[in-house]
Length: 596
Image (cartoon, rainbow, N blue to C red):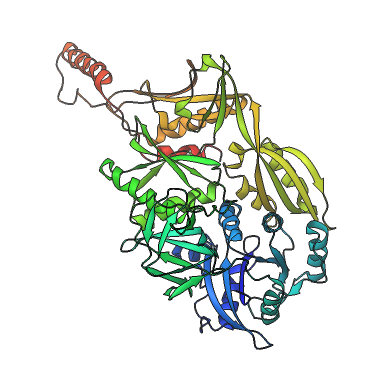
């Protein structure tokens, strides 16, 4: 126990967490090659995008300069704000955190957020300035920012280059010297936290665990505290980073347990595993459910794949406990699921992973947020899908979710950032100057504005230098309306959207204009309408395809031609009554682009 150190690496996106993890793996002899960069980012998507999506755990042996043998358990965490839940879960399994600051960028928004998460979790923080080998490294400025924004001693910051390996041996010595060993004793009853899991088609659910007390070996029985389900342990081991079986895990260690848990739903991330002999062992506190911020509907392209989609989502949630889903159906798209995500990047990554890892062919509807609708009789309803809104006459008012965003931007680019924020209905709360070169802006935004590309536009107007982090700040009353889209007088619920009243007309006109180009022409005229309640605010017609019924008439009396045209007119009228219009799948992605 005295020689175990559990720590994680936290930082803003792209500050060098995975590169530092590579150097530590090399120095401890866990891997022997430098060809495979970002070893812990094993997912194809992580490599393509150059970001960490999943927190990864690895166990390493380490011999310090004084000859003592240590076991280091490292967790490499994501940096993007959408994957914050991965960071908060990882902190529960650690006693220390290495806080990285990029010397060329300084302390950024997510650095501050992650530092506060680590402080709240009571972890020992080792602050490190990385990328000191870069020609534009601002080492003195970074030290100053650590002191002014986080209250950490600038002169105590360790200087390293994760790329070249400079300073990393000193960091390892600091970790074994400053991070406290785990508490708890192997003789006490078993108590361990499930901080992650994945589904294996042969072994079932494999939970990743951190033991707080007791020990675990093959043949033991474990009980899930929340459900009282008992399972037989058939394998225990740790990550090197591959799964490596071992005879037993004891208090303070991080590893995995195989117990043939076949049923998805028998165990969740955040659960506590105990011994069935000591049922009175308390659950480990502090693992809270995440609150999804963005919702969208997903539907299989082939309706026969609906049961497979349900199974895929159950398995996916084992690996990503922050998504929520429930069944829903749409007149236009059939049966599907309503999914909740932490943000737009999280939504994008999840849909991509469902396609790649689980072979799902999906249509995703327009992302939306949860609105609080207060009816005329005083009831309030939380509604995440525009198609579930009550009738306009029964709504007293609508409240929309607000987030508090912290934006760090170079001082000379404050003007364009403020202009963009105000165009997105942002309200400035504070403006601070952490140092002479940068400004910290605090804004309250409607979340609906944030999900329509605000972050991308912020990066554009700040030439890539701005960084952002946000928290949920509650609900605020707004002048909001629901816009319905009617195709051939039939409502298409998947195209409904919520908008502020002043921009509803413009958005509706843009959408209807784009829809007219997308929906193919039929043999009858198709009216496209956008309406608020019963009031139509935009309309365009798709002209019918006209068959030339007069082609066979050459010469002859005009009455013959008139007779054929009348017959065609009657046929079109009849067709319009019974004909149905197929809305192509691309139409559902249009709503995302009406902002552009």
